[in-house]
Image (cartoon, rainbow, N blue to C red; front, side):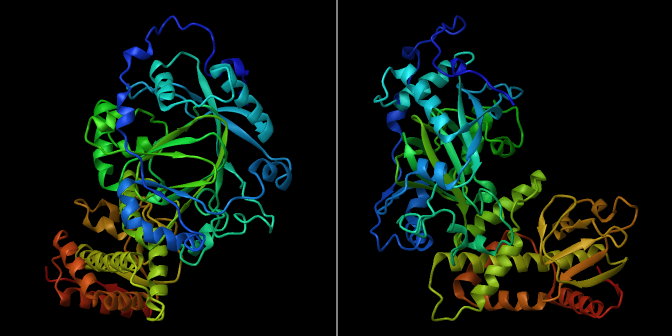
Length: 533
């Protein structure tokens, strides 16, 4: 394990002879041009159900990428008490972060994740406070945004900070008398609330289903990134100095990526979203402002939540020692963004963390079985229905296309009740249907490859062909539910628009014939797919 003395931390008094730039050489006036994100002050009654409250503010707040919520309920048990008494023996390892802007040379992969020391909460606080006083001469000073970006732009050699990032655990108290700890805003419980899509996951995923701690010091930072699967995130500030957050609305994500590609990586890198996913790209928001990418900020203090919305790039830094806690979450209006992330992951050949298709199918079935009296006209319900109908309709196109490609092959169709499978070629998650090689049970393919220009995907590495089609045994139920949803006027209109963007040459007879032949195989007979094309 790497260790180093606090003398190596930021703000050493040693002179840097290689960098004689001063604050006057930097134009930091752009800092004042960044508007603040919306701030919400819910009443105790409004605060009762976090996911329902977030659904009510999302149409407005999501336009800013981030928002801040001031909790009307305060914790009774401080974070330091929880981490020292309720979590006995709590220790965490830090990452060492260089306090400078990364070189714009794409070959410069500066070590954002160099391992630091292992600390107890009290030990880290003591170290962080000493560094703070050495820099500002007083613990009462309040560092500004200008101070942070000056230090980053000067980039003095050897200066670094430490950050306890992705630390497993929670600082929400289990004391039954703690008002915040027993509320639904306790991040340990958020993923399991009734309206949470992640309640359908059958396993624990740290950071996604269970919260993680973020214990920072002066100028600890989180680089520009978007959440895994374009999920929501919620961050609670337990204690300590403020954090500054920057957020970019989802509608400008592509423009953000173009600005990073051309003005941070100088146009020399492809797959910029994959680079950003490494969470090592830190640069001033002025780069975005100069390229017409809107940026909003939040100053988060103890007792406040910051929400990041799906596909909203964000970054930030700490103004001193602090302790925060964060977790991802998803509600119905996330599914269109989750679908985009699924497509992006497949193109980049990145393994998914959560099974998008399975979650969507399960939510759709639950929504279909919901009593009309209980179904509210929420945007989340519309998003679930539309995403599900699109999924089924595109699957029908894939099956039609498959019948054309395999028309001269002896191909089998099997019924399955298996959980999600990952495509061996692009890692896309498959729940409703997939292809397999009859000789290699571990080799499976998603049906999206039927649209590839070449047909080499049919050939399994073992030398045989992937011509065994697996469909869920309750596939007809999913199709029927999709058709029920599609009868709603808004869904029907959206689907027609969606299909205009995707050429679909199959006639109804083609697809019906294919399904009927598929059903015959479900009774154990081999299917010979034929076509007049």
